[in-house]
Amino acid sequence: MTTSTVGLIAGLLLTIAITTGGFTGLLLAVVLGAVGYLVGGHVDGEIDVRSLLRGRRE
Image (cartoon, rainbow, N blue to C red):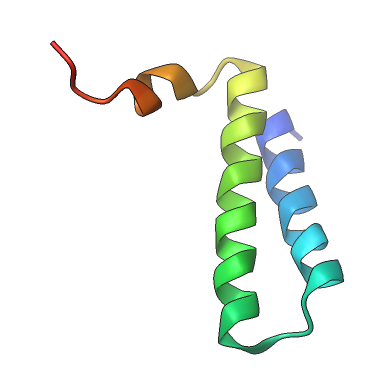
């Protein structure tokens, strides 16, 4: 299992612990899962978060 996958699972589990459901809980699960995946991917070197945040500056 890669670090990005572990980050995704951790983000989803934290969301389950924080919320009790509903549409807001679903949105929070998606956001925290995506953040966990990005952080884990950055640690693994799979994703360059700096280039994503930098945008299209010339």
